[in-house]
Image (cartoon, rainbow, N blue to C red; front, side):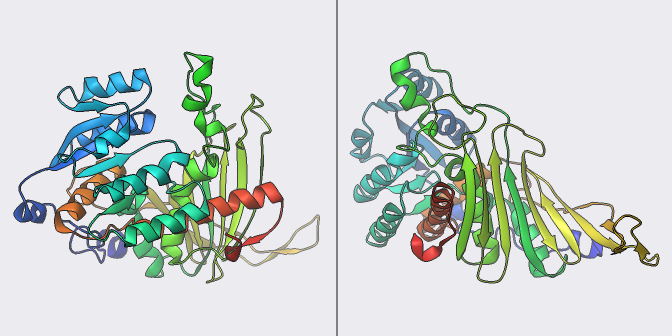
Length: 396
């Protein structure tokens, strides 16, 4: 592995070549007016992303909507001059709103996105795109029938240059032939949020209930499954999985742990796990090649070369088997540069490109087709875990 030759000098001579609107200065030359946005859903994710919007060039939040009083009031404090709506449909009726950001519970994604497209709005829809495979197909059809509206799905890691650098390394043969991935998204918590009134339990902790959410696979693992689909340029052909409620026995319906193994048409096998009882190494994607391994962490990636010991083969004294000593060399950090030379949150870059796509009329990198592929992949894993059987893509 030539560290300097590859890690410093990549194929990305121009920033953001895979994206719709980078570099940003081209946006301003096309149109000076900001994109007017309405925020639909102001829970933990919605409020966090709304905070990012205040720091993003060319965005003007004019409206917000939420049905819960604390979240509605929090939105008003963050955007004191914006108009608040209890019913997001009233927000969609506003002619001053060009685009909406939707961060509602998963089971409402399809209906809210559909109504927004039918109202002529551009849409940034949080992952997982839909709650069922059928809804994913319907949303693709609806988006196709509204070609002037941009529909971007919230798989923000597609917009973080770190992942483009890793894919460049894989495609360049930097770690040899890749046939295995190991992905994990682990936490050590009950994943619950405080409930001030027991009658609000299912509204606040909707991730715990199958009626509203696919649980760990759709809320956490979907990010990594989307990366797997992107890196392998295809959807999986089959999946086997197991999961359960084995630690947090608190009345929840969605699993507190799940392990899935996907098979791809190119022969790649990828394990994807999420647990809520141990957070060691938290978020990680390990790309296993014949010449080395790349481990992707939150904001960094490291390459570990495979090292074959040159000493003669030995015989194990217990088993009598010949043993060859392998190991990893010293890790090398992959160097990358984000589009604007700033270390922004990946969601910020996704939002910035959404604005660019709206202004330039371009198709997002994370679009309705890639969103459908990710949604069907994680939903299939849930079905495999519940049924205890190997399922194929046609079973979606």
